[in-house]
Image (cartoon, rainbow, N blue to C red; front, side, top):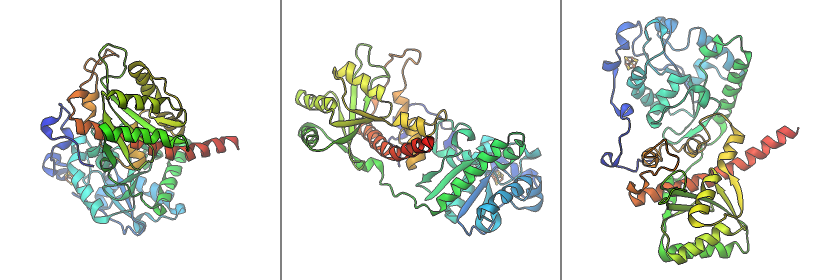
Amino acid sequence: MQGFFDDSELPTVSKRKSKKLSCLQCKLYSDCISPRMLPSGDGKKGIYVLAEAPGRTEDEEGVQLVGKAGTFLKDMLAPMGVVLDRDCIKDNAVRCRPPKNRTPSDIEIESCRLNILESVEKYAPKLILLFGAPALESFVGARFKKALGGISKWRGIVFPDRTYNAWVAPLFHPSFVMRSEKKPVIKKIFGDDVQAALEYLSVPLPQIQDEADCVRIVEGFALETLLSGLLERSKNEKIKLAFDYETTGKKPHAPGHEIVAASLCWDGETSYAFKFPLREDELTLFKRVLRSPRIAKTAHNIKFEDTWSSVILGVKVAGWEWCSMQGSHIINNKPGITGLKFQAIINFGLFGYAEEIEPFLESIDPKNANSFNRVKEIPEKKLLTYCGIDSLVQYRLALKQGPKIADIARSQRM
Ligand code: SF4
């Protein structure tokens, strides 16, 4: 998905990841035996293995993953039906050995990134295994402007990558697993993660339409028709509705706070976004939708939509059915992964739709919970598109979570 803004419209954000770097800035080539080591392996199963950096043995032999960590990985993959050199393409986040095997720096990883991405494009793998934090930073870092968090946050996740048409699995680095021999659970987790990732070789990648194209911006008669139609349909069938607000702050209680936009999605295909304030007849219909117990509501963190509906619109929302944030906690309760934007990446491969908008949603006074933000500076169409994508993703997420949580509940009863 393309960004929403021209550079001139953006508030100050880090440009660290947009600099063009190369071997000239990195210089690792100048102090190793096998500089600029090209990927190796036959790649028969379409697996791209990205490790950290060549070690001493790799540098001496000019081939990736032939030292202790590589042998460990090879031995682990073999019983899973994967021959490392035959079935995989092997590469490193930096292609020259760092002195004394030190961890590559961010600048070195960034300098080498283009080499890696060009090779991934060339080999067009079905599955990309990212071993360790430098591999994660190399492959994902340019598309994720916030701090990535450690590999522990990402491991165990397999997500669809729409840019490279492949499944991507971040994993511990084999060296870390070897160093953790006193904690056998680490080896067990690593083996389970690798096995789970390999199963995706036979899973087709989801074909997902650009979410921005699924958002319809509605107002006036079109909005009234939409809301009346929804209420009418709810007389005969139960409707599942994801809804989302954009607001002037995190909490609605300080005088002057407003709901600025809302969006609704009830089929997972199209999302309808509209701006506030609504005209009186539109508002009446919208409140009826919120109050209808026959329209089952979903949101990501329902406390937010519930509180703003109550304080700003004076409506007690009926029919709450699903909180996709709670669902995310139940499925995987690691810190830092249950937010909607992270869930959009790991479930749908949707990167970056919020990164340009979020600085405007930050509190002007971070120490004050009732502080205002700069949401009103966001151009209207962009805000509504962003809001629409939120409810679309929420709906799809809730749909995906239901069967997973039922499986978890079943396995706990056994
Ligand atoms: S690690 Fe990559 S960017 Fe750095 S010198 Fe070697 S090939 Fe060039």
